[in-house]
Structure formats: C-alpha cells, structure tokens
Length: 99
View 1 (cartoon, rainbow, N blue to C red):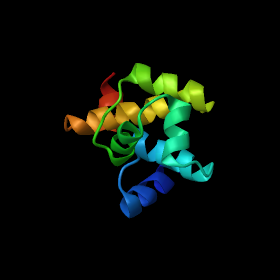
View 2 (cartoon, one colour):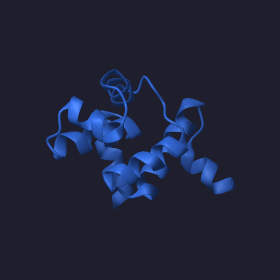
View 3 (tube, helix red, strand yellow):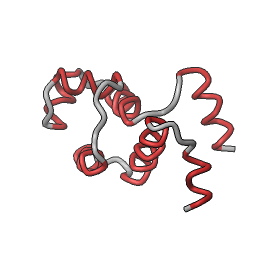
View 4 (cartoon, rainbow, N blue to C red):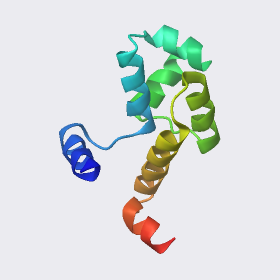
C-alpha cells in the first residue's frame, strides 16, 4: 500500500528527495528559511539549494541533520540512497534486489 501511495505522490510532485523532506519539515513546523538554517547550522542560501535539489548532501550530513531535527534517520537515509541511485541512472529497487 505504501509503495502505491509513494508512486501517486511522485507522479504529482516528483521523486521524494532529502531536500523535499527538509522543506516539508520546515513548512509543517512553520519555520522560516532563516529559522531552519539556524537550526541546521547552515547558511540560508545553502538550505535553499538543498531544498531545490541543487546541492546534494553526504549521508553523514543527512544523519547529522536528522539528529538536529529529531527525525527518523532510517527514513532520510533510504531517501538519500534512492536519490543517489537516481543521480547515476540506477533504479533503487532493482539495485536492492541484487545486493
């Protein structure tokens, strides 16, 4: 069921990314870019680039962010892995089948 929901969401807004998760968190918690960037200890322009998908974080950076936001690191880590696979033209689910 969750997989079907994810496909529907991706058709509507595109693939889920670390940046979209962070933007969703920021909007849900009604934080401004300034407030969120201070919370994450990054610059406002950097946060804007991350949210827009123009800057890709390392897995270590993603895990650090989840700690600062008290978010589930396994969810963000999976999304990061999926995003990295897409960036190099791999299908994440196919990749997981052979690992």
